[in-house]
Image (cartoon, rainbow, N blue to C red; front, side, top):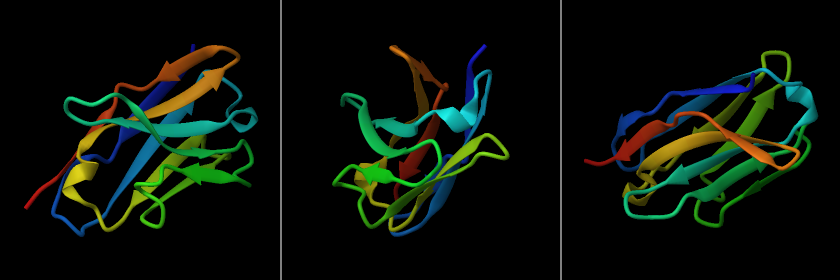
Amino acid sequence: QVQLVESGGGLVQPGGSLRLSCAASGFTFSSYVMAWYRQAPGKERELVARITNTGGSTNYADSVKGRFTISRDNTKNTVSLQMNSLKPEDTAVYYCNVRLITLNYWGKGTLVTVSS
């Protein structure tokens, strides 16, 4: 069965950095696009970043361009999100995602809090 497990969240000061990781299992990882989403308090879930199966192409939400970097390691079945220059508005639960055909699969999420 498909399983996605996020890690790396925590409390960080504005301007600081965090690196999130997602461990994937239960599917052929190298065949699929992976993504990070987030949901802030009182807001809808939004796409943060996506990466193609080989890692050859990425895209980002306008709000994080230049600050966040998504990457993947197909030998370890992991996808990461490096977050730099963090702002209070980045505070959210961050979720790892894969879409298999028409079904979306999600991890349980990891909480990122940006506050002084």
